Image 1 (cartoon, one colour):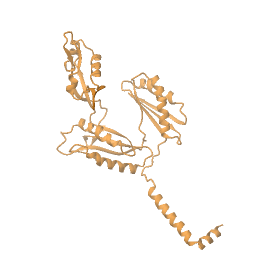
Image 2 (spheres, rainbow, N blue to C red):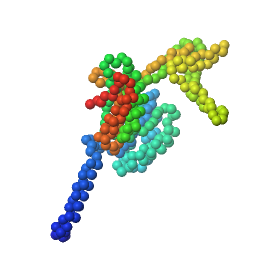
Image 3 (spheres, one colour):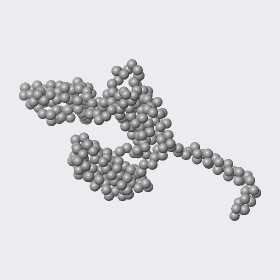
Image 4 (cartoon, rainbow, N blue to C red):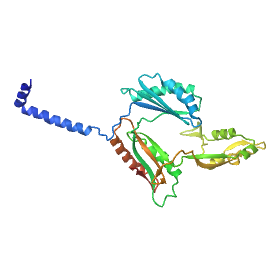
Length: 328
C-alpha cells in the first residue's frame, strides 16, 4: 500500500504539490482562527442563585430562603452537585450540572423552579435572582474613575458613583462578551426623608400616611386624547418627582381646618446614601470603579480588546476632568 502511494506521488508531482499548497493554506487559515487564551477557564458547568434578605439573620436565611429553594430545584435532571451558603442577609446556592448540559437550558429550568419556590417564601422577604453568566475566572478588566488634579473637590464620591452606575456601567453592558459590570466604591445616591416623630405626632399622622402619600404622588398617568382634526391632543398627568423640592411639596393629608400638611412640615428631605459595608481604595485614596465580568465561554483576549474600544467611546460621555483609568 505504501509503495503504491509513493509510486503515485512520484508519477503525479503536480497533483501532490497542489495538495501540499492546499494543506498549508488550510493550516494557516486555521491558525488565524485559533482562539488563544492566557488563562483557560476550567470552572465546572454551574449556575448560582443569589437571594438578598437584609432583614434576616443567618438562621432565618437558611430556614426561610435557602431550604425552600433547594427543595424546589433538587429534582432538576443532570444535577451533579448542589451546595449553598447562608449568611447574614444573603443566600448563595450553587448548582453544578453535567458538562454536556447547555447552560441556558439549565438557567431556564432554574427560573421555572424558582417560581414555585416563591410560594414557600413569605412575600417581599427576599430578592432572588440568578448570577450573571460568568465564572470564577471571569474578572478580566478592572478600572477606576480618576479625577484630574485640582478637581478632587468638584466630584464627590457620590457623584462619581452615580457616573459609574448610570453612564459607564450602562454603556459597558452592551459590549460583546461582557456578562456584567460590578461597581465598587463611593456612595449610592438616595433621596432620604428624615421624619420628625414629634411633628408627626403633633399632626396626628403615622409613618404609613407618609408611605401612602409618597406612593400616590409619584407617578405619571395617561388618559384619552382630544381629536381636533388633523391634530390629536394626548392627555397626560405629570406627577413624577424630580427634585427635593418636589418631594417637600407632596401633600400628606389635610387637617381639620382643611389646611394641607406637606412632607416638609413633618420631615426633612435630603440626599443620602445606602449603607456601605466596605470601601474601594486606590493608592490610599478612596476611589470609585468597576470590574468587568466576561461571558462564560468567551475569549478573554478578544473581550478585553472590545472593552478597551468601548472605553474610548464612553470617555467622550464623561464630564471634563473625569477619565477611566485601567488598574494593573
